[in-house]
Image (cartoon, rainbow, N blue to C red; front, side):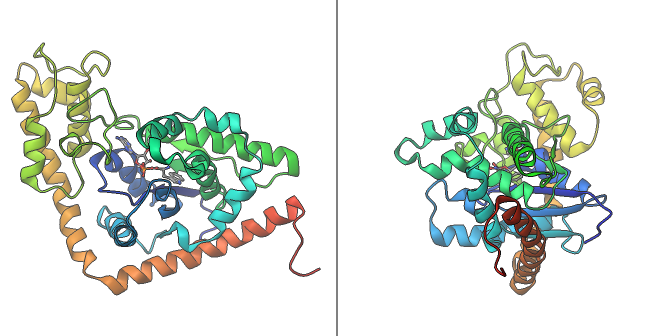
Length: 334
Ligand code: TYM
């Protein structure tokens, strides 16, 4: 590890198909940041357990998610990529931080409120303490920067609060991290319901998966919900559907929103949708091709995962020694 570089940490749940929301809001930033920082990118399988999972599927998805990281452009030589459950310190630190987190703080989390509504039959304690495990993920590595989409902002704020509280009580222990949220694309909206966030747990037509076939992408975008005034303009409040399409087009074409609005002035929504579909299909094609290739390289993926867990584990171990000492837990050697 290059000690001179600052640390970046982020994670994605291996639950379901990753969407272009994950790609635009998070993965694209991850790829950019790998050049300048020492980065750890984690498949957060423990977080996924807050919702009931099929074990065989979860196991498969962890490897697939790692393959997708690499296919999106993350270089295993530059980054530490691994599976959260392979480094037990995440769960251990999570317990210690649980004891420094207030019920009231967790009760305010909007994601907890949303998820408990969606999974009324399984409002488990893990769902409630989910942000504490996320704080443990980040704080274990002395992370300075956390690239995330808008929906994780509140979780990062509680992570900062926990770190500051701990530092105040026991002396400087944790780096207090900053969020890294893209200016455009931090909240990609649903295709069919542009007032809601695009989510992999939404209904099929509402999201575009990174691995969707070109036909499916074009079909979904043709059915994208817009509005009735017919003008192509960027205005997320008044025109959420059209603004969302412009955001997606910007993310895949690299052209600024202003340039796109000028170029599309006077054109119909059909043309906008075609342009988005074309850019999206072209942008995802290399990722999809690389994903197919890499998924067959089982031993390579295993090696990346094992090596990542070893390197992450070594850093985590050092942090845990410090934390245990600060808290007064009995040392191994008296
Ligand atoms: P997850 O798996 O739901 O999403 C992964 C990342 O994708 C972003 N994202 C979006 N960005 C823009 N538009 C959208 N529609 C959209 N949907 C998802 C998310 O903001 C996220 O950055 N709790 C986290 C995972 C996690 C984590 C961490 C992240 C666990 N530990 C430590 C950072 C640091 C989650 O469930 O993300």
